[in-house]
Amino acid sequence: MISLGTLLFTWANGKLVGTDSFGNRYYQARSAAKGARVKRWVIYNGPVEGSMVPPEWHAWLHYTSDAPLTAAPRREWQKAHEGNATGTQAAYLPPGHDLMGGRRERAAGDYEAWQP
Image (tube, rainbow, N blue to C red; front, top):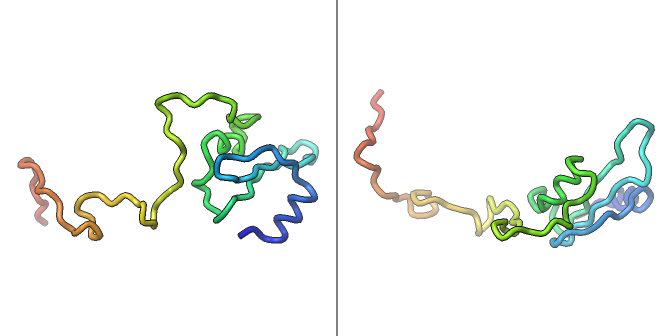
């Protein structure tokens, strides 16, 4: 949930730069103090979750690029961006995890348990 203060600051000082596929809106300040960088920020569409910023916008937010990299064509080996699923039903659970039954395949024959 976005705060009223952030909305007012954005309305008074922000210039919309663009949006991403998740509906997040990216802004930069209309002006900057002398000798300072122009401030950049994002207003999330939904919960505030940093992993929901795609790489092309992440580079722009962190001043790695001067413009968002949205115009660059996606290559066939690049996957679509996915947010961090930790703590959700979609989280990865390796074999042997307690929530996956706690059993895993036996280790290879070259494994020896440590004895104190």
